Image (tube, rainbow, N blue to C red; front, top):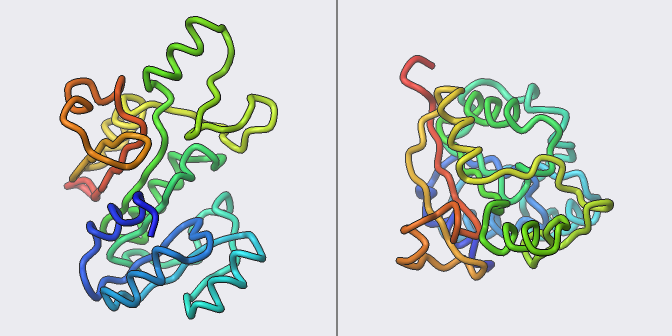
Length: 200
């Protein structure tokens, strides 16, 4: 299993009710169903991904994340997961709100646009960064809301979203001591485990 999905799987309790937004080929849910006996559903809009999920026995619903989650009732899930898609949806703030409406907690992961390599490309070359984590040119990227860890944490503060846990990793999804010295400078990806505010 991919390194980022292993990190996410470690944050999910056995037997949990899980919703995976943009589930792809169902790798995470397949693992969780097999190893943690979760009751899981995935959302994806790609027909080939959906066929692959079905072939694995993963419950999947064809749905575009930009449609929101109005078809799910409040607190339907223990955990709602969105891996590497925050930057590609039209209304990321509303989607995170929705995730915490339908789930007790959620996990959000995304690449850091403030990583030192991105800063260097902008400063030294004057062009939008292209990297392994952000591989598209500015004119064909699916990413429409690039953000930094600091941006996301400010959003959480504004929305009174509780950051339960943050894990910052390198390009290989490994945690390194030096990253914690300046996470927004050295971190490539972040994993945020979020909860409802006290007043929710």
